[in-house]
Image (tube, rainbow, N blue to C red; front, top):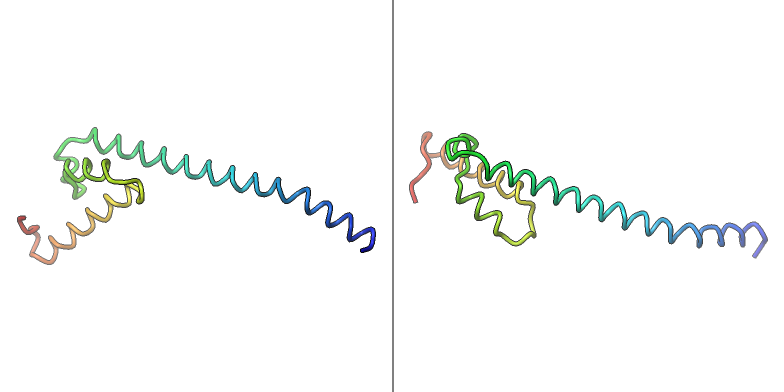
Length: 100
């Protein structure tokens, strides 16, 4: 191994742990940010009136159900899917959602 190769290898070995630490830190910060945004969105949704929730295609029980669900899925994404599906069903049934 030449001197230049040895120095390059040594520099890469030293820089690599810093890169791993940086990647882990960025990942943790991204997850914390996403968690905080979802929590803030859920708080805002829980403060809305029933009329406001109905206006965006949700019910109070939708918000409660998603808030209690396991954190495998972002709560706001799950609520968007519920509202989308409800709007799609309403469009298929001539503007009124089917009664359950």
